[in-house]
Structure formats: structure tokens, C-alpha cells
Image 1 (tube, rainbow, N blue to C red):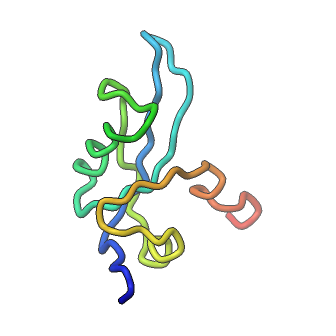
Image 2 (cartoon, rainbow, N blue to C red):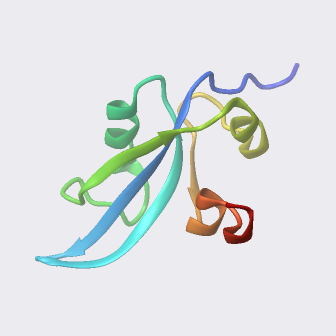
Length: 90
């Protein structure tokens, strides 16, 4: 029996911080029906603190969900290049 893929998912940006200084950004694909819930569901992901600012950037298309094989509730780390696409194809 094949695993069911998520119906909706979001790209979420997290700004990792140490005190008042931003250290780096993390980009994650989060399977969730709601963007606000997607951003909140990252507290269980290693290296992300509940105080780190985060925002759902955009909804993933079904083809992207299939490529990432995102099941309901899944979280996958991304790299910015894969999010923004190839610069020469813009």
C-alpha cells in the first residue's frame, strides 16, 4: 500500500538566533494544511528553538510535494537554491 502524501505543504524560513544576533536562516518544507501551524510545528526539529522567528514563505505545489515525498506532518530541510530555482531560469 503506498504512503499517502500531504495535501498541502509550506516552505518555512526560520531565523536562528543567539541572543540578539541572527546566526543563519534555515529553510524547511513542512506538510500542514495551515501556514501558521506549519511554522509552529518546527519546535520539535533539531536546532530550532521556540523563540526563533519563523514565517511560512509560500505554499508548495503538488509536484513539489511529490518530489519531496512529504507525508502529512513531515518536515524536510531545504537549501535556498532549491527554493528559489535556478537563477538563469528566472
